[in-house]
Image 1 (tube, rainbow, N blue to C red):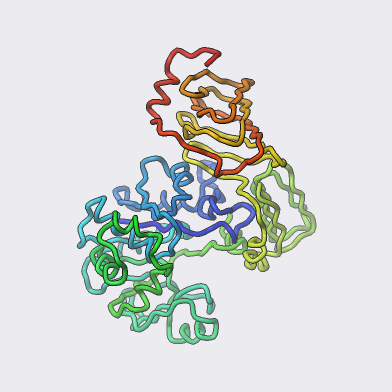
Image 2: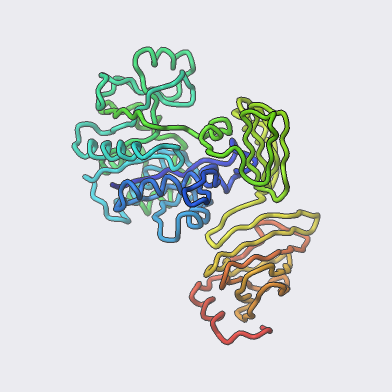
Length: 453
């Protein structure tokens, strides 16, 4: 099967653990059989590989997620990178053009699109396989997944099928009606739009060329910022007369809020936390290295991370976004392709960060015009490369990086450092990358190392 996984979204509804870089699908909530924790993205990716080890998976994601995707899913994944956020229609068109023009997939082949973050069981992927096969038969231009609605929600699109069969034609599709209209649709036998659908690759390319001005993948990439911000459902599905729906009755949860997320969590406590015996229906997710004690609470979620602390009634947690929008705070934690960083302290002309480099990885080779830095190695071994000279580093070493010097660190084993930034202007904009290949950096580091430069 050819999969396109949609990995958009921003970090609002699962604050304080999510942010503009670390969207909800990358937070490690779910405990695996091995006792480790995995994110929604890792879980879905693993489930697809289990269902079809030969599946071709391409992730459609904004460039801000590139590092965390590589960190969590590996360096060899296929990614259709969106230069900026333009909603799902441009994202799906770009990924479809990527499959055709870069990966060489034929216009007659079927493609399945689904979100990267549904909480589902294995039956979900068997249904996706059936949808893919149905799209290949060409009986309809789109094959949607329909889910039996639980209540008249305003968050979902509604599919009105022509029959009660597993596969049915579609009488109408309406995107996110108000609650009263949704209730009327449900009385007509409507299904929730599950956000997953299948089509022959050539169909979306043809429709895209009718609606957008571009020649091929490369041209679309250049013009992407000018594309309209519109969802695939509004741009294509609502206007398409030839649609079928396939019913799915297995496990499916949209874990978009703390309230729904805690329903899927197998543990009530993650991190250093204690609940006393008078607590009921309370969940704590603690990413800080300090304990949390909860006593006599009911129907509450507590979440603590570098961005802040949330204490909320579970039902009220669904309305978090407007309040988080008022916060003006820099990103305090992020995963990168080489590891991660966590901001420990912010001063007027200083910032202190804990940096973790995975074994065999390095930072970008870069410099700063307005700040100097000091690295203190906490653990691990590796090399510091400064102006193309190197020294070995290990626990206890201190490395001074003057303003303007080009520098990077390479981890031989997992390397943890405290980085203190000092200067009149400390910002993410004060970083200039320099064109030196990773192989060149490794070649420098592999020379006979000394304690000097």
